[in-house]
Image 1: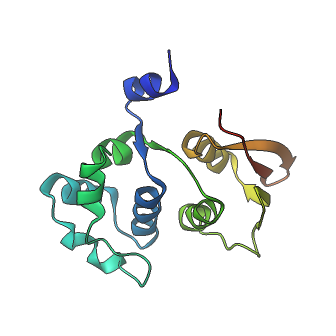
Image 2: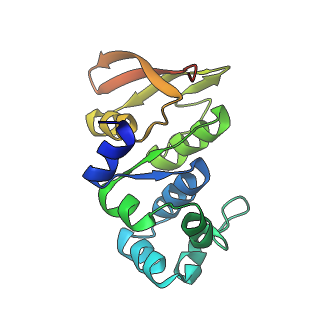
Length: 156
């Protein structure tokens, strides 16, 4: 069974990098999943306004997801996988999702992320959401979790 069909059966949504970053930013700003679900259901992004900042606008968040077949409801309830990550997009997603800072908590190079330390739950979350054009190339188990190296993969 293909990854897409398998993910659909499990309920996992596929989200663009942009949508995933906005979703995780809203969560990092204290917007609860129930508020995000209500906004997705009603089509009214007003409840997400408190999460807005210079690079995080929610005006087209719901309409973009709907137009591109992205199920925000499924993403919030069952999880998601990002369809494709750029190097900078992955950096931003890691910062928003795990509350980390690039250059301090991990390093981003050309096609590589090094020094990323996550606990067991963080590693599982990353494994389930990381776009297929990136892979976990190395895991080094530490006393308080795991240090990871991520590498860009060639797409066939």
